[in-house]
Figure 1 (spheres, one colour):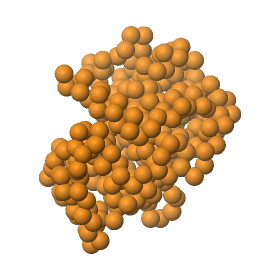
Figure 2: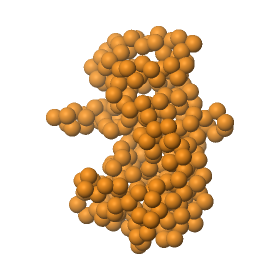
Figure 3: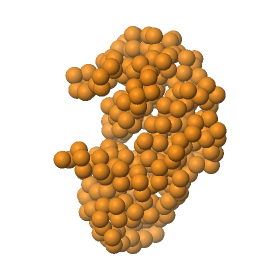
Length: 300
């Protein structure tokens, strides 16, 4: 199957492309700057921009299925509008050639109380659903792996703040999932025709609070007694962004929307994906250990 991956330079996309090749697919990627992309052997590289429809004319020709893994949070405050336009341009171009589209969105409740980040993820999902192809949506919460902005933020907080004053969001339930498991689901749905046109929730084997995630990550990093968490009811996620800015190098355009989303529980309520795609789920501790090992190899 010839498969197009958008967002191939990102955290999930860079893990997905090699796995698609390993599974015998012909892979094409769309990147904004081909000279800056170190393509694995056998990958066909197209240069273009989803915000510029004129650059997409030949990208989808001959493609059987396409992955939408694009996110514009790094662009700053207008990321919602940019994501809307990018998804609309993708849907229009893909509708002329592609039979299937796979989208990785955000897990969480529906409603008016969603953070701007999660709300935008759902809007993108709605825009993609208007295309003339069968859309498979996978919804995930925190993805654990080397290169994940959320995981990187947790590691830096644990390393630099042995004592944390935190708001109520530290007790919000979350169902983190290893990046290897996310990729296994993304690849697996291509070989499961029944998943076409369906929406699934994916998550790891454990539901944890953010406090527990930080403490278990700290232990994996060799910090037995940190962080000491002092909960302060009046400290809002908005105020939390200030000390995240102070102690981490995560871009605020990314960190702030993520932190505001911590108020929303992100837990799997429907396990129907397991009937279509079998994945041996990775424990949170093993996912953290693998991520830290890969980070260490990268630094070396």
